[in-house]
Length: 88
Image 1: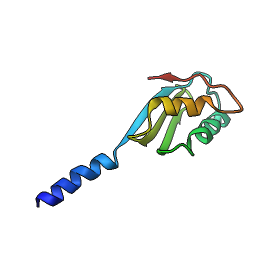
Image 2: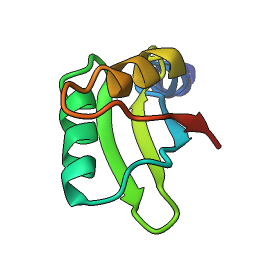
Image 3: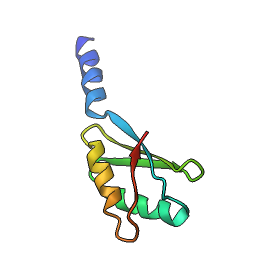
Image 4: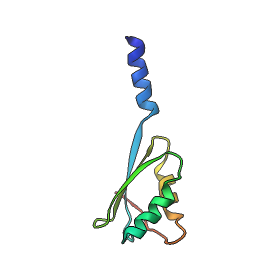
């Protein structure tokens, strides 16, 4: 029984995720969303992304080893548009 509990605790740390809550004020359309998604989708640790065009908010879920600065750097590296990125 102790081994099962220990395994459950260890796996929760191994598979932990985090959500980076960002605001991108110059994200204005679905094309911008696609550019941002393309910038982060191949980033190591990327899990998912959700967005709200009205509030300009983007939530990017990654594994626990992906830092906020890595996410921001990936978004700012977009070749088509230079996005401004703020943290919520």
